[in-house]
Amino acid sequence: MKSWKWLVRSGLLLAALGLFLWALTGYWMGEGLKAKADGKNEVAIVLGAKVNGEVPSLSLRYRLEAALAYGEAHPQVKFILSGGQGPDEAVSEAEAMRRYLVEHGIAEDRLLLEPMSTSTYENIKNSKELLPEGVSAVTLITSDYHVARARKIAANLGLTTDAVAAKTPQIVKAKLKTRERLALLKTYLMGK
Image 1 (cartoon, rainbow, N blue to C red):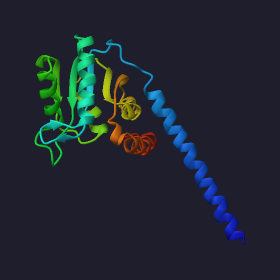
Image 2 (tube, one colour):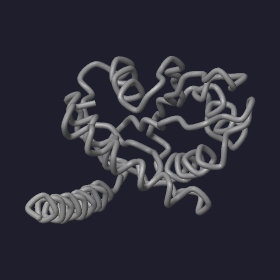
Image 3 (cartoon, one colour):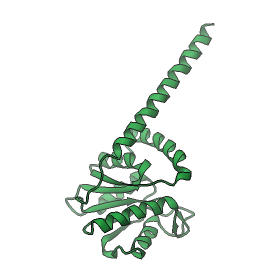
Image 4 (cartoon, rainbow, N blue to C red):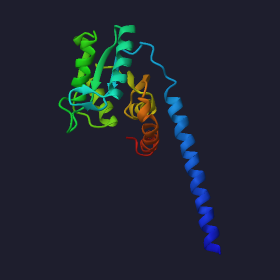
């Protein structure tokens, strides 16, 4: 009988912990969206996402549309386009982003490519190395669900950030938000 009570108590404790962590990561995700970009940072880092062959996925297109609107509103801002090339991608995410933005009117001299990264941590770490000397405040452009973790990683790397949150495709929103909660916990625990 005692083992039954222990099992029930353990189950309730795990459920309570799960609910607490769900609420905590939801709070962090909401807080991450509060630092809205206003054009004061001279550099914006656009974080990569899947490329289908040479064509930006819908998630990446939404990030690029957000970057395009931001770039039009703030013509002094330069962009670091950050994303490597996956095994099923014909070009790097950075190159696919460059093509899209140039095709849509952003001058090539406003764009700098970081084509080697394979994770959000590497996106930001590698992009930081490309920043002009003395620049430690940047704007991050990424999907809404991803902003909090990207900003936390940037802070861990010594950067001050604001953000432009791109919308997330509805078809994958629930899956990505759930996965992002786990990744956000990992970032808070491990720093990456």
